[in-house]
Amino acid sequence: MAEFDVFTCTPALTAEHKPAPKAWDKHLRVDIHCHIQCAAADDLARPFANPMAAPIVKFANDATREVNKAQLAGLAHAMTSLDLRLQVMDRGGIDVQVLSPAPSHYYYWADPDLAIEATRLVNDHITEAVATHPGRLAGLGTIPLQHPALAIEEMHRLAKLGLRGFEVGTSVMGRELSDPSLRPIWAKAEELGMLVFVHPLGFTHGDRMTEHYFINTIGNPLESALAVGYLIHDGVLKDHPGLKICVAHGGGYLPGYIGRMDHAFAARSDCGCGLDNPPSHYLGQLYFDSVVYNARELRYLIDTFGAEHVLMGTDYPYDMSEADPVGHVAAAVQDDAEARAVLGGNAARLLGLDYDQLLSRARQT
Image 1: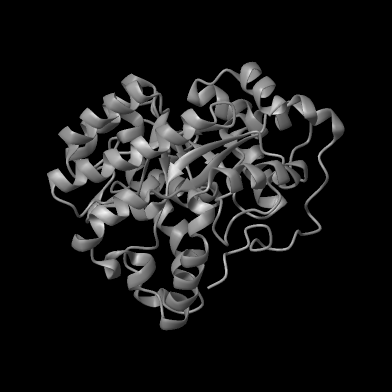
Image 2: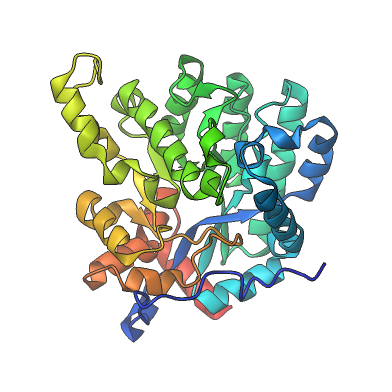
């Protein structure tokens, strides 16, 4: 099969995209949502994995599975080649990519030995990529969420490797992210100041989503909404106000309809019992990427939660990626301060990156 063309796979630009002002050259541009594949980890896990277990596969129809199979085969080079990655970054006006594992690297089904070995292969791979291009790449790792003690051990290792946080799925083999067994992980992430990037892999009960790729287009944002709902209502965000969480795809559906939860909180005794504030208060503690494809939706996130809570992302290199992330931001922000924050200032702050140094290094390469 021909190599997947990452320059043409993304959707055509819409009228809502705008050229970035020349004055924006002074702003660092950081992509918070982009993925990388570790072939060694896949090779290790493949003999034990059930490909049909992931909701994105399990609840897809045959047509969607064929499209995904062809896409993933063609994307192999884009997922692994750093040279191609840098070319795409330059084309899209991105100074720094914050690499996160491909969601297929959630080995939450694995036993302790396999889980930690696969996890460390992924994290070492990302660390090596960042070390190869330290001025253009930063990294988020992965942790074996199903084994909390090992997960915390790996979090300390991530910090030593220089990775700035970790990516997680929206549930762990039937356990919600708010499950009591996972509480020590969130406490440790808050203590270490790590960014947690929440990324779904299809809706976990998607029987009605087999057609039209609904398992992604509807399922992914719905899955994120549920995960965040549990984090709010089960008190994780209340108990850990310093926890830094960024939710992929603009946070899913919840940011656009949080008023319904607030109403139930006020009207019913079974909604949010134990919370000191309405659900919207805790939702406001979170951060959201810009991968919503529509300038009006991006503007809504900025108006509702503040420009300081929105980070530019692409979802590179998948076909659901944003083709012109800087133009997408340009169509939504209202002033230079908002542009600086969304384009890269927020990401640098949350990840503890040196804004001026990265800006200087990126523009010299």
